[in-house]
Length: 445
Image (cartoon, rainbow, N blue to C red; front, top):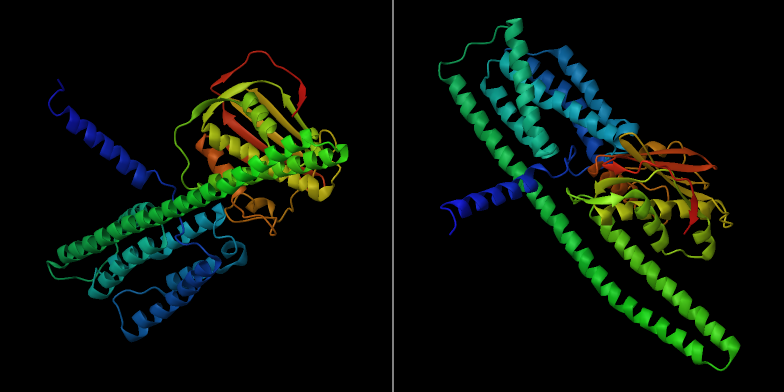
């Protein structure tokens, strides 16, 4: 017989865990709906709006406190978002961090300061309420919540330390201001949470659509696989030797095409799950993982297969999603082979090397190619979503996906490259287990 209330406690715990996963553990979005033009327009609005409202509040609708120098400084800070190096790459970490700081200074910090210096009068009470709603519209609700509280507390502490005077207000004005601000803040918080939930539902619907499309594509591919098997059988029973060879060659080409198409479907589905990576993982052997991925990769030719050399210096084990991490190595191998194809179609032995090793608490998986390398201007941006050096066929999600998976495993993914000489991708991971002996050896896939 169950203990009284045990079922309720378990249900409450499950609901709490689901809510935490749904609302708190989702990836942060420092810039909502990021795009170059959104950043430029925001920067333009800040750089023009600060001096404009400074003129209005000081010359036309005069307020008790106004600071022209502060307005000018914030106007120049707003110009940061219009710089090409910032606005051109809205998904880069540098742009996101700069945007977070700029928006925080321009909105909660500045508006809280002006609210206090003006004694919380009607004009600045309305402005502060508008600021809160705008702030939650520009950034993730979790960032906006922390930013609003931190900005208000910072200004309150500085204001009282400096002992600045503020215009007197009616006795109940402060209480009225607190109630109105809390109302605006609670509305903004609820809208921010609901908007984030709506974006996630749209993403889930998109992933569902991709899954349906993948399923529909696999049906004709299965038929193509059966046709290739029939061709293979027909070639074995054909009387003409030349005709049999041609049939066998066609069957192999069709089979290879089927493998490649299925591989592409798996790749696109994994890349589409960029924002939905699993938190828990499997205990993975790095050496076995590399050998399995290299062995199962759908090469386009025997030369591609023979150019890869795997070297196991020291085996180690780490924790991650086996399926997702296999896709990471798959993406890195695909990019390396494409770079080699661009540089030359020779594919010499060792043109693509994968090394596995461990030292202390860190394990490393290194993918080294002798391809075209990466342009130094592109190097800082290759891990950004939708940034691609291959504009013809690249979608710009592969390396962003790889970085997210590695970071989910508490590791790091970095790259070194020399143009026309090749690129080296380095995965470093926390080691859970490792072998005591080192093993040096090469193996072809």
